[in-house]
Image 1 (cartoon, rainbow, N blue to C red):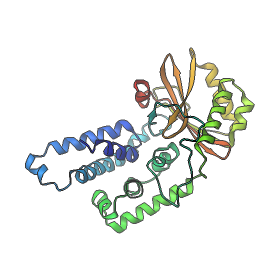
Image 2 (spheres, helix red, strand yellow):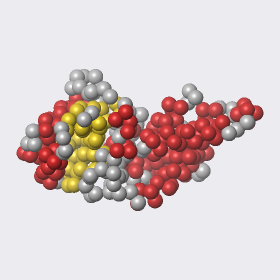
Image 3 (cartoon, one colour):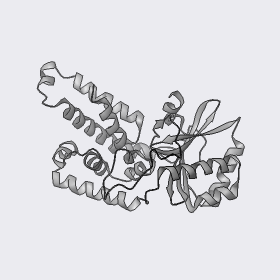
Image 4 (cartoon, helix red, strand yellow):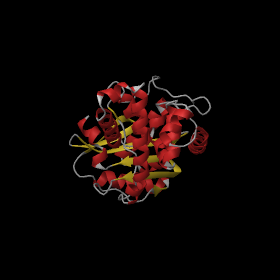
Length: 293
């Protein structure tokens, strides 16, 4: 059971869903306990066995996920990870650029990164996460993906190019926090001009309601359209809407609450001094950890 945390970390990055990751890990353990004690004792490295099985389960789930996403109502966004501590503008946690193509565990959960992973094929995603993030050899990756080590190397290389093309220059966490805080204050004040100034002219908002919460079914593009959309959203919110600062997938984000219940989680991508992307998760099924946590 000491492997559980590692397996959840791996499965979440592979699937982009905490709920699906927990199910995949549960299935992994079910297969372990379905074996006889003699079979278990014959496994040289239980940790490696569990990782291999979890990786294959996730690969199968990714293959079927595309069909499920096609039936999904509106846009699909990876499930946001809750971190209850507030972020600050202090020096702790300030980010610096990673050397070359090195991907850290922290970086691999930010929303912008997870969204790029969604554009990859299941095999690319698994090969890249296992090798570049969790440092498994291509020989080990090949056993999970069911391809040759050379083919897995090519898959990871292709995935790496996608990540490289999508990356924006690293912005220190303190600077990100300041911009998101200014955004929150402008939003609460319904200051359209201030919001426009904080948004990149070509900024995009993507909302995920899953058909269970009111959300735009298509991306909203352009700083002016976004500013008007957000102020209308705030003005039409039933009851009292409270917006609080929270760490969302390792970066400064915002959480909207009504009567103590989380109704939306907002993740941001920032380039320089402006917000380029906002991901708004409103699907209540994806917000359960935020409401109960």
